Length: 389
Ligand code: APR
Ligand code: PHB
Image 1 (cartoon, rainbow, N blue to C red):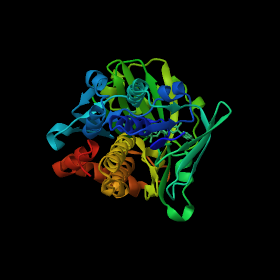
Image 2 (tube, rainbow, N blue to C red; image 1 turned 180 degrees about the vertical axis):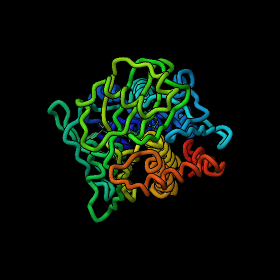
Image 3 (cartoon, rainbow, N blue to C red; image 1 turned 135 degrees about the vertical axis):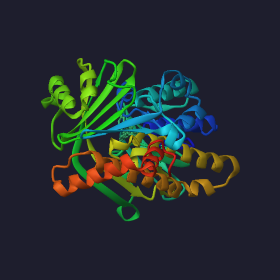
Image 4 (cartoon, rainbow, N blue to C red; image 1 turned 30 degrees about the vertical axis):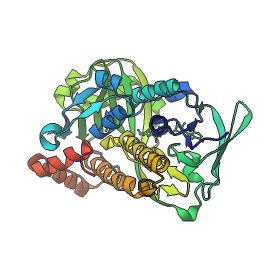
């Protein structure tokens, strides 16, 4: 088989890249380890920056997003007994849109099905070769049958654990990493959210977040220690702990019900550099991970895919490689801005097991600066909506 761009992974990065390449008339094939049902069923992030919404609109998958997405003009931060509302419109001239990654994935899968571009789901033993010269290939098997895909470029959109980054010789890549020894235990429940906007809460007992997917579906998180197991948390225990950590009015407004999803995600910051190795490009979680506190993971994946698609379009349309050559530097600039913001939000709002009384005082001072300084609020708002790069 031959194609122009082989895309490994059908997460938001791979599906969006495929969609943008389809629109540019560039042949592409997606190779994904999981089944379509598995990919479509994953519950992940849910907050889109205005820039991400624009990319999805330009990709022709903005219609349901415009109908069903919830536009949020601000968020609330609760720190012990204090509350602060960050008004995105006033402070940074924009808004976020709450629309689940699950829905973004659905819309992109539907668009791909309509385009007729080929996808191999359930692909095993994916091996990348030849990307250091002019003959890149992707080999894999599906239902026991071996396949080989020759291409001009490989896009590694295969997440943190995928084979793309692992195929790069160790001496050619540098890793930057921070582990936080914390996890987020999240549940999804068919009950109305406690409030119209998200609430990020920093409490003595640990961090909590009230988010949502729709006016009737809520997404809640509480910080847990590394190594805690989801089986050890009943819904009742989760709601009890959440109530403890929320401001009294939010705790009183909490409507509970059986969880329809419950999972733990470990917090990690990770970046590799560069993002290009000959004819292989790394995109999305394959290249970087942020802790979820700043809601940046999905947005970075979307922006990486858009940037790479623009570079590939210029390559095929005009023969100019300037944009493609600039992909790694341009994306890394945005990635590090998001890494800094996500790290900062994480450090501000969580309770760290090894933190001493000095560390809590510094967190308090950081929050008080936010409370009092419109400049600090502006910086938070512009980072949150992705206006600061
Ligand atoms: N072969 C083929 N596909 C693979 C392989 C493999 N060996 N390993 C992983 N994959 C697939 C995964 O099954 C997944 O569908 O690559 C895809 C990667 O998708 P994501 O993990 O969703 O990563 P990305 O598309 O970069 O999206 C980033 O997802 O994880 C969240 O918070 C993150 O919101 C961010 C977004
Ligand atoms: C979510 O709704 O899943 C969500 C929202 C905000 C975050 C992280 C996750 O910072």
